[in-house]
Image 1: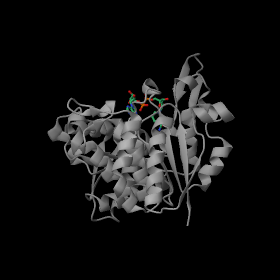
Image 2: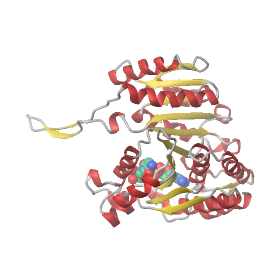
Image 3: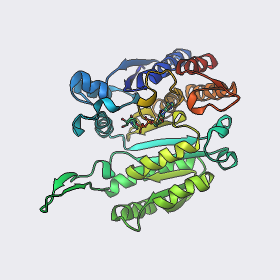
Image 4: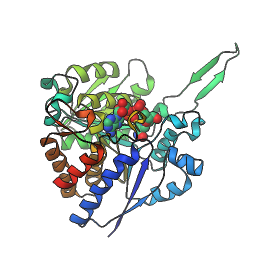
Amino acid sequence: MSRNILLMTGDGIGPEIVAEASKVLDQVNSRFSLGLVMSEAKLGGQAYDEYGAPYPEATRDKARQADAILLGAVGGPKWDAVERHLRPEQGLLDIRSDLQLFANLRPAILYPQLADASSLKPELVAGLDILIVRELTGGIYFGEPRGIRILEDGQRQGYNTDVYTESEIRRIAEIGFELARKRGGRICSVDKANVLEVTLLWREVVTEVSTNYPDVELSHLYVDNAAMQLVARPKQFDVILTGNLFGDILSDEAAMLTGSIGMLPSASLNKERRGMYEPCHGSAPDITGQGIANPLATILSLSMMLRYSLGEQKAADSIDAAVGRVLDTGLRTQDIFTPGTTKASTSEMGEAVLKEL
Ligand code: NAD
């Protein structure tokens, strides 16, 4: 049975990193006889340039047919002046919402070879393995009403709405508990229940869901404390479960514990476990076109795709192992480079992974 994989390079460094990941995908496809059929579509700024919309119909049709999607990244200064609803980042919000990709999984794993690249002391981060489960299609990024209005006294007022229904909280909590059960058996739910009613409900519903998972230990933290704990004692965490806004921020913080955002993959799944896979980072306009972007987060996103949407554990393991072996050789892109290691370009890193496969 063939399965459809949609590749979307997006903007900035997107084409550079997806080019490397795409070679890796072709190689595992033939080596493990996966029967994957690849096609391409445009999202973000490149879609706006061609179709006048960041998530055009042509892309929507292909995305809805796909068993899994690999995305580079979207956005960049070129589109800064474009109206908000046509900005590249809106395309990302639209596709997540259209495909109901409500569960965002972001592992923050520190490869032992990269302990020196972390900004924290190696003993604080060595062996770090956190999974952040972030709700992705609700909360303040989607809540209505929103906007900037003129008040009676003539000044402008910006406003957004943070909303979650019980069912939205329950379905993401269940994913978090299921994953915690398969890992270290601990989940920490992050909210701001002392100030925000929406997250008070979050805490109540997560606590209700926990009664179905007596084998998983649940704790709660306020987001300010969670941010502090992540840098003070990061290894205390197993699974972190949180909403859209807090998850956005905490996952970037966790990313830096691991040395570079260029190492971190992510998965965004819907209830049938179809999903979109992408590196945690953005389009990195500051390094676009220089051939120095780290392609490993994108390559590791492929491994998550094989594991979570396609059920191809062996192929996924082979990619993870190949990345580990490349790091063993001391090859590093600029973002993870430390003295004594060997600097590699984007394509040299991609080629090295292919060779190890
Ligand atoms: P960014 O993640 O693009 O870059 C932050 C820093 O990390 C930069 O210094 C960049 O050079 C570096 N970096 C990122 N990826 C790297 C890689 N693979 N290898 C080496 N270094 C890497 O975040 P930003 O600068 O805040 O945003 C740039 C653009 O990306 C904006 O338009 C933003 O809206 C967009 N963005 C898109 C996504 C997405 O597509 N999912 C996510 C975040 C930001």
